[in-house]
Image 1: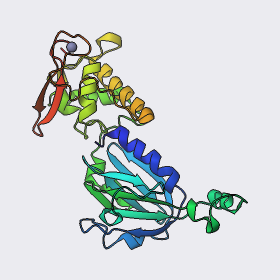
Image 2: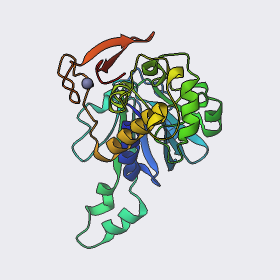
Image 3: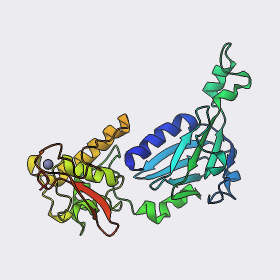
Image 4: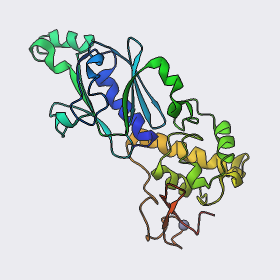
Length: 281
Ligand SMILES: [Zn+2]
């Protein structure tokens, strides 16, 4: 599931295959792809920068164009490591073939290096599924309502905890709903919502406005957001998520052992929240 941590991992996976390279060929064979008629516009362009904003991925190209991608619950970007994508090419929303970069070309020229013609140094990447994939002028991204409305990114290097805490406490919703509201803070999804509340011993059902703030132990809101950030940064590095409470309904709480994990849909979107009534209050 695409939460902020998995998007950063996607960006890191794509970077070596795309950055500084020219798009030699682009196709969008899936009839549902919004780029079906426009993929050709990508050819000949160089990939300049790959950026994540919460759950959004932006691939910036030269000539002032950007690809804006959102993977939703089930989408994914794949890199062909030599054995295809594990899915038919024709089902891709977008498939990009990238030319080898200069460094690799130099290597390919070495005796005993890559295959003749340096073919092995090129790369292929593709997006399958997702909720958004569009090609826009980079300047238009600033006017995109979904991007413009995003709150501070929980994974941003310059994440401002104090500012995020005050935003969180202005929410009229319960904690478990407010954490998913990308307009308040972006990047947190359903897994880290429950895992962070559990780790920080915060009741996900209390109003976000009632979270205590302050230095040290008394700062419930600070602890909650620091925990979420810490858990997600760790997941970026390891690819593993905490897994202490999410989908553990009915099992004894791994911390207090005095109660069983409960789960219930929360908010208008009815997203399942997992919590321990004994130690999260
Ligand atoms: Zn417990």
